[in-house]
Image (tube, rainbow, N blue to C red; front, side, top):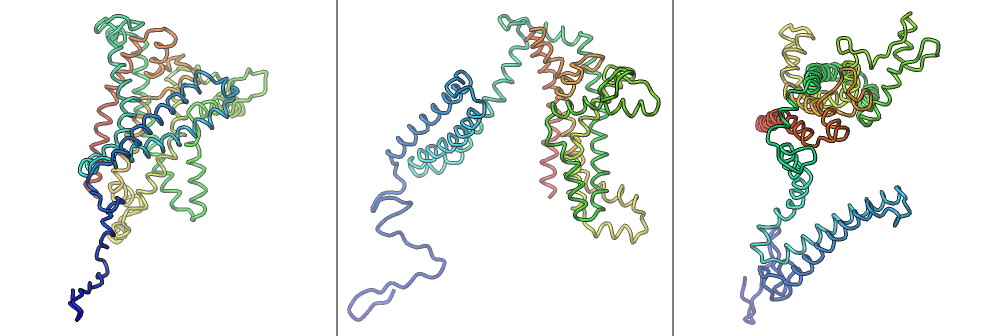
Length: 399
């Protein structure tokens, strides 16, 4: 500041980048002269009331869709559109009023609470949809068929000594041996071959191979049911596999009923591999493209063949991605259900753990034994999940 001849004080213009001083005592949108750290009761009340009303409206709207579809003319399309509007719009209002409520709190409390307030609904939803059912399932696994009385470990004894469950365990192990390894191998091969094509050829080939990922498991099973369809010898073949088989002089086969060497199980594994190869290809292709060219050129200068470069240079550098894909498919295989349910429903030695649970719960009305099966499956999946989380953390630390 400089003093003028008329005893006035001239204020120097702020330098570029200096914070602009608040005008008339305004700070954070407050009123002139207000304390920005003070609570704003109006915001607290409006935010809290608005949050409760928005939640109440969403809850009752969703209940009305389920219990009173006649209010909407029994139109599934209309109910679907309204559910979309209520879900998206309701979520926006919930967070809007939640933000208003937190901003109305005293400054230090507001700043401390803000991140937790926005994470809380997500955690609450996870708790409601995942943790609570898991705890209840464990609880029901110690109860009788209709969950009215505790029976201790009887359900686990019955399940673990059941020949059907032993068959399901064997089939799941068979799926675990075949599907993840085959998926990763095909994914690597397709990724390498697609990368050798022209830009347009790579895009088209990858799009075609990835396309099955957009199909549900039930839809894919229905498609492949046409491939494995059986037709009597005196009728024209409609099943693709039997048409090819008969073209070579063979008799039509009931492929999905042929349990010799678990042939029907292997045929169903083909469906899951077909669905997941695109997923594996995309991740592995991205990893291969990320391999530094310097290492490949150095290997070529040292006289390594392309095959040696692939196995000794490329594969070690994409090992992390391979493990990620493998573990993801392993978890999927442990939970496989839709394909078996649609094609065989566990008949002819094709039963798996998830389908055994479904049969116990809905066909045999044994909720206790069904819950015990789920707990066993949960125990089997948990070590794989723990390893996957640790692997991701190590990958992040290594970057």
